[in-house]
Image 1 (cartoon, rainbow over the protein chains, first blue to last red):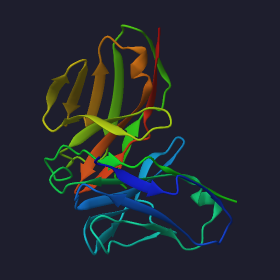
Image 2: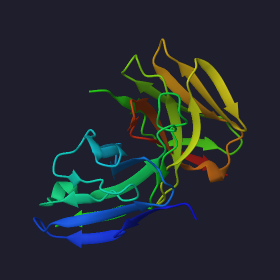
Image 3: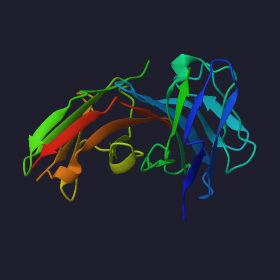
Image 4: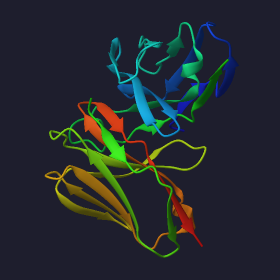
Length: 118
Length: 109
């Protein structure tokens, strides 16, 4: 089954304790991205990657790190989480064609990871 | 800062009515526009995309694009309670999909 898998789905942690949210896709997609979703603010892009070893900042990259060492994996790292990073996080993947200028824009989302930082 | 703006709602319509959802964007050079639907507690899913000025129809859904006025809209005809969800407008900015804040739609039986 084609899917994007995120772990953990739910996490409560404390300020300053490093954590990693994993994301894996089995569709051989070149493009992967992380979003956070907050009430009234919609989906905001944190980082995206057009291919292995290529990553770019989205609109809200502060406080986050990513890496793309393998095509299928795109982990999101919070080195020193703070309460303002409490949010619902989505990983998404797609093909380069779909996210191109005349692509369908279809992103395949994971189920989301709800993170609470105390 | 490139922006995509939507009324957050909630927008409430009776069953069978037409629901009209609107979105404006700031980058005049944007070329690709998308509508996603997100049910409560679920992930967003793509329902329509549009590139050209005018209307694009898919079943009960019609996307409308007006590049001169920089707005894109989604019409849902014969609205059903199952259409109750948050609708997200998105614009493609060179591989970055910029989303609006979403409009919550409630269809009352």
